[in-house]
Image (tube, rainbow, N blue to C red; front, top):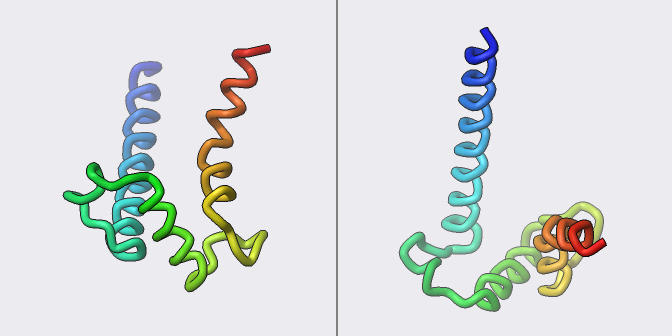
Length: 89
């Protein structure tokens, strides 16, 4: 019984991860107009430029009207920064 619950939990979690991955892939290809083949060769600043450009057209964040590249990077790195701070203390 415990194994069944564990297996079911992992199956549901895997489906959620696949769904999020699909949404991210769709966002990159449709909104940012970045093809899957070009993404590994792109520089981070190019992706940020496209994110800022999309932010001007479509409001990606409800809190602020506009996000610049620094705001976007800080939001992406927030979780990693918390983890680094916890390890350093």
